[in-house]
Amino acid sequence: MKNTDFVVRFAGEGGQGFLSAAIGFASANTKAGYHAQTFATFPSQITGGPTWMQTRISINPVLSRGDEVDVLVVFNEYAYEAHKNEVKENGFILYDSDQLNIEDSNKVLGIAFEKLGKTTGNSRAANMVMMGALAELVGVNLSVLEDFVKERWGNVERYGEHIVPQNIQALKLGSKEVQERGLKLSEIESPKKSDTQQIFLNGNDAISLGAYAAGIEYYVGYPISPATTILVWMEKNLVEKNKFVYQVSSEIEAITAIIGASYGGKKSMTATAGPGFSLMSEGLGLAWMAEIPIVVVDVQRGGPATGLPTKTEQSDLLSSINPAHGDVSLPVIAPGTVEECFYGTIEAFNWAEKYQGPVILLSEHGLAERQQNIPKPNISKLNVEKRLINKSSENYHRYESGNISPMPIPGLPGPYVANASEHDKMGDTTHLPERHVEMTERRFKKLDILKNSNYEYINAESKILLMPWGGSKGPSLEAYEKLQEQNIDIGWAYTMFLNPLPEKLLIELRSKNLVIVPELNYLGQFSSLLRSQNVNAQSITQYTGLPFKVEYLVNKITELL
Image (tube, rainbow, N blue to C red; front, side, top):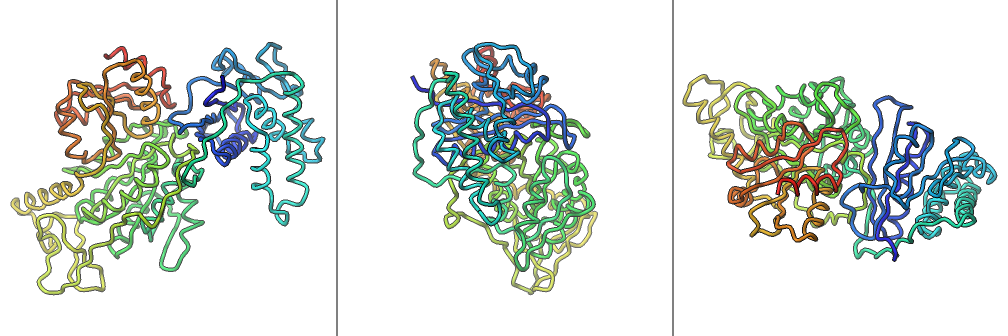
């Protein structure tokens, strides 16, 4: 019987080049029609330290990184000792026989990757030998990787005329080594070609593309892991006339700069992680108070303080909703997949324009680094909100209406005072109690505009729901499907719109006996938020810096039930 998917883990030390090999292997298979998802974890130093990346290839859409490993490729002895116990009983361990001395067994396969690679004339072809051996082990047709090599290095002017044939030769050498030893996993089924064109990218790139599709005009940011690649993407691509991108000296400068740009009429965004987001607190309060639309991306990592800068966590939810002092409740959108990173960013810009204020896009390290194939978006069908601009100069009061009002742009008709102090309808400073009550109620009432967002709801008749958020969606959905196979009575609910929650969904949640929330934090932050809104919610928490395993969730949910 053929397999429907397999999991490959590459483990070694940072700087050994296997992360690129893992991404290349996944990308090549997606071009052949398979689905793929990668997961990477590494230390915070620039090079060195224990690093590994996992690639899951499947004929079906991939929901999680996969619990167990079919093939482990190790690049040093430490990696072998650390990961060998996660290999399936019928799995294999690949290693360079000239570099490591590993005890022989029926699941260990040593090949002289580097030596064989050099015989092609290319001193850097060792990874191609390894990929050829890997393809033979898991039953992937070698032509899949050959096509990838031709596309990746086919530019003769840039790479020379020898690189493609050398790499293809290296692939064949690795495949031949496995063939001669008669080793093989069960062959994977042929891919089902998708009806839609697929693209292969990570979460941070999807966020950047979403911002571009939403019409971003102004981006400034400060480098901080794991959000830096959004800044890098913008520096390379936000280059048209009347668009601006800049690396500033601090997160405080970043938040105040995008507020100023939006005040001037530009769609503006910055991206940071937890420590930088903390520094933006006062600026976010200003944007809330002055009602200026901006988007702030918080790519969550382990915290607090420096914490775990290269590990994943979901522990910034409460601080995202209430980042500033005083009565503040910021809108929060938390995508759960790479595809949702794209569409969630567009919705963040739309929300900012609809209610005229700051919106937090709450991503996380596990999504930022995750490579995944998604259907190519149809840009022509996207709904993008435009700025509501004031055109009247007669007796115009910026904060007069019950919810939102057209924004004056400096230099255009209408007076505009962007005031961080409490103000009246014109924007002038006031300390009168009745004005503070009036403006506070105005700011909170505007959130009602955002309460009709989309959500997922399955098995609505069940009195118990599983409701993850953010990047825990994938493993939770896979766990839910396994529970359904066991005929366990449980429903499913999910939305990336966390504050405010979709009004109809909240009504449904309040009618349930229990809502189970898998989330990667200690406090159970989303379940506490749900309980504050009269929902009987309980969390399944994990705070290891790694995503949930599906089996762990199935066991924990079963215990609760």
